[in-house]
Amino acid sequence: MTQWQTTIPVEFLFRLEADLGSLAHVRELPPGARTVVEILGGRFVGPRLRGTLEVPGGDWLTARGDGTYKLDVRISLRTDDGALIVMTYQGISVHSEGGSVTRTAPLFETTDPRYAWLNRVQAVGVGERRGSSLITYDVYAVL
Image 1 (cartoon, rainbow, N blue to C red):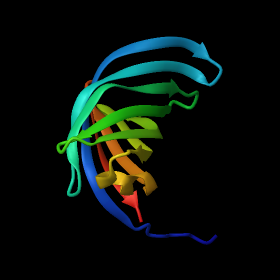
Image 2 (cartoon, rainbow, N blue to C red; image 1 turned 90 degrees about the vertical axis):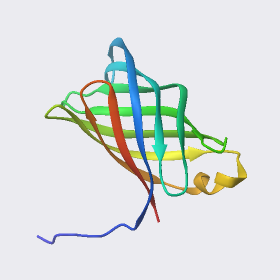
Image 3 (cartoon, rainbow, N blue to C red; image 1 turned 30 degrees about the vertical axis):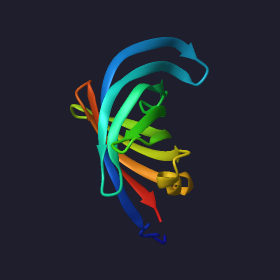
Image 4 (tube, one colour; image 1 turned 45 degrees about the vertical axis):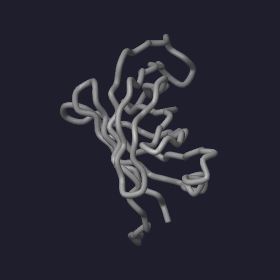
């Protein structure tokens, strides 16, 4: 059997910390049980952009039969210089000791010309949740 290994070039964009709020549980749906997780705010900091998470924001989380969770997140980023950037992503979260480990695929939308380059970025996020109120991601642009 042949092992494939590759290195995907990435550029670090920012570290994002999101404060999580209330949960709204939805009964069983065809894909699984759904929980809407409120995002109360947070911060992102990186070499090319930094700012805060705007409200409202949330994660439409689906509990799957194999014990994993499918993420469907929509948040707005407000840069320290006033630009508004919409960040959406899907991903998979797996329970770990004391929280969860998460992998995501963020996309961005903005009309601000200073950050228009983000409209062409496919990103990946590597994150973890410790406890129930804070999740942290490192977000990278795939080059």
